[in-house]
Amino acid sequence: MKILKNKIMIIALFSLWSCFSQNNEFSKVKHVVVIGFDGLSPDGIEHASTPAFHKLMKEGASTMHARSVLPSSSSTNWASMIMGAGPEQHGITSNDWEKSNFVLPSVVQGDDFLFPTIFSIINSQIKNAEIGAVYHWSGFGRLFEKSAVDYNVNPETEDKTAVIASDYIKAKQPTFTFIHFDHVDHAGHEFGHGSTEYYKSVEKADALLAQVMQAITSSPMGNETVVIVSADHGGLGKGHGGESLQEMEIPFIIWGKSVKKNTILNYPVYQYDNAATVAFALGIKMPMASIGRPVKNAFEGYNEIDSYTLTKRYKEPVIQPKAYLSKKAGGLFREAAQVVIDNPDKEGEIRYTLDGSMPAKDSEIYKMPFKVYQNTVVKSAIFKNQSIASLVNEAFFRVVSSTAKAPVSYEIFYLSNLNSVPFLDKYTPDEKGSCFEIGSDEIDSKIKENTAVRFKTVIKIDKEEQYGFFTRSDDGSILKINNEVVVNNDGDHGVKEKGGAITLKPGTYTLEVIWFNGGGSGWLDVYYQTASVPKQIIPAAFFQKMSFN
Image (cartoon, rainbow, N blue to C red; front, side):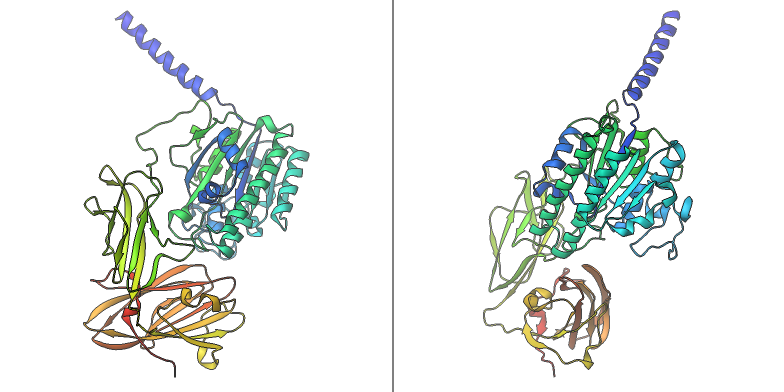
């Protein structure tokens, strides 16, 4: 019995020592710098030339699968990053949020009626802490307590942001610095995520990151600093705010004192974990109202495990012609279309369907290119060990005969100061023409800022059925059947989809879509579906010719 008690005591002491030993391999740091790049996606880091980002990843810990909060918009996510809470807690649910104009109050309130941010938390717990915020986007300034910050600057450009932040770090050796760059998001909105110009903006971000890192590492605070690099959201086409992985996934890179080197973080990291990780590094406490958790596995001495690591996800198949910016894969073809599907990772097998249904383990295996001779919705995914292992990709192939005539008429109006769908009957169109489909791709060369377009055609219905119609547009659009509004997707916004439904009896109906592009470049495509027809871009075969009077 005595031996057993001794063994139990030894085991207990060993467990306590292990706990003590593990938790004390990490000692708090004196300085933390958070560098945020608005609109920076993991795709941007992967496909642009980014030696500075990759150097930090090699010398630190990182994941390219951190998650934003919904909606994937800037105000909501920057707030979540610095508050350690989601929009359900802090109440900043859109970019329209203002202190004088909010719907959902925060669950707790600190200064300025805000949910407490990492700025005020540091200020209240670390005596004489030097705290700075240098932010390129002025809107960031309304998200934190000014009274908690010693240095508050909103530079005009990303270049000035890097210079001012670097000078501040070298001069003041701040306890906490938040640096925000906005130019990547601008490129995403103007040229589109995945465009050449977008990748160039990421390469500039890389150079600015190197500039700030040089200021940190060359200063006395260099050896006592943790740096966190992340973003508010990614993007899809020329916008963001939706639920796609392209919009929701963000990079999370952590570097510095006591941070593991060349480490991939295999457990989930969420936007609101950022503030909690800052607090952990500095050895301070987050409020009970915060839901963020520190990313401890990034630090030496921590190796928390459970049964739920990040799922290995293969890249989705690429259906040719592939999607680009807001344009879906597939396209409009004469007589027939050849379907080519590529496997980017060269692992697993591609399975596909041609009826718009989700691919399953018993779906057709893709072996070689094939042709389709009618309107077809192709969906495909990578399967590994009989299980789906990637996102599903879809493509819309529309086929018309070589003698077919364009069934859609359009009118183009060049106007001014557009921020909603205009009433066009009082204007004379600047251009008229016809096309095969209702969409901006058909008349792309004619679209510029402050342009409105009215598309008109006729549809013939053979049996009574409920029809769903959808417009996906940047900016606003309205779809009418026999002059009745079925879809109202109006407003000055990025690419956004809205739908509506209407029951149609046998007969013919006029279908009209009015769309406008306010600033920059725009986009429009239109979809329909029924109980028997999968959701798809409305094909030309659905239309009958109608001219404007």
